[in-house]
Image (cartoon, rainbow, N blue to C red):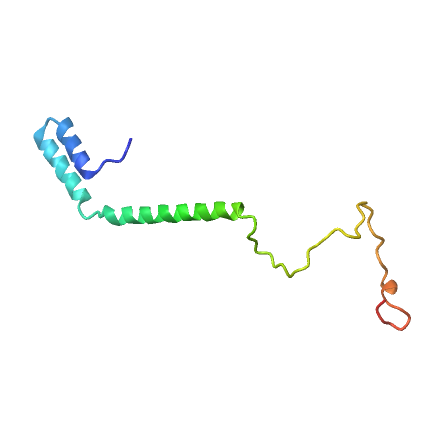
Length: 107
């Protein structure tokens, strides 16, 4: 069921209800209920939000489609696997004494 405008509701009441007194009363109630409701503000807000939604969707798509743009600083060093063994053998933990030489300085 779709939403009807005020005019469509009044027309439907006029067509469907044969009792003129009841039809008149219902049409007055509808008229009073719709009075003061400004749908143009709501329609403008809906249109604005739909436009923002489309813009956000486009930005989201563009983010993935543009491969050359990144937020990564090119001056930062990249992590590499050079010198790393592919084996999953854990390194032996170092002892506290192994960190310092006899003079107490770091090795």
